[in-house]
Image (cartoon, rainbow, N blue to C red; front, side, top):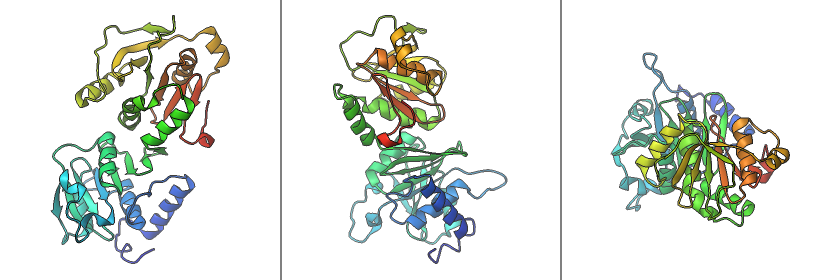
Length: 334
């Protein structure tokens, strides 16, 4: 362990070692993209167990951008275009962290200290927002959400700790690449907004749902749908307010949601009724939601079905096949 980190009394070197070993044992790419892996471990350990004040557990956020961000001669750092950067060089590290709420203010960490506070003009608490920020500035982002979930955002995707288990979601491009191989007859690039919504808006908030994308002129298979709610609004996933409205509805609604080629909502609260052949071909997997969705995908091979577990993980389905990982060797069901 490097000298200098021993002084951080809330994060002991032994704890850092155990955390590093845990990440390694779980096969998590949590520190990928970190300019300083020790600093990243320190910030992750702090986010997992922050300093309490009067019994209150604070939220927290830290940015670990590439080393070049504040290097001499680097004229226009990307972070400077989206946030106000306030120097805090003379503040003790532990005290500097108190200003970073992981919502609109984040500590900007270098090797041994917090150099700046990044203050944003709007909330950056959402997973979707932080995925976009990481793609823009690079490096690693660590957040302890006000709800208690700890998340890391890096070039290898999103790693979450829910208080009990770790979960990793691969980057969107990796999912799209996998879909191209599994469903070569469909324009799978068009599903990107729906997949992003499923992974980062629903999965990140623990909202279980079944989402069906039909980029086709073929009719819905007869007798496979039973609408429980009629006249759903035509909400669009590329509009922030409409996306939020849809997530709010899904958090309170059973049944599947159906989207057209343009990933606009066309139906909501749909009970899926499998054919006899689907029931024969597809056995029970992972619970009622996953089983009914997989049987529907068997009956409707012109669709891509996305199932979001209320525990966070996302399963993609096509033509009766369940896709649980961007790496076929790691799939658990299907």
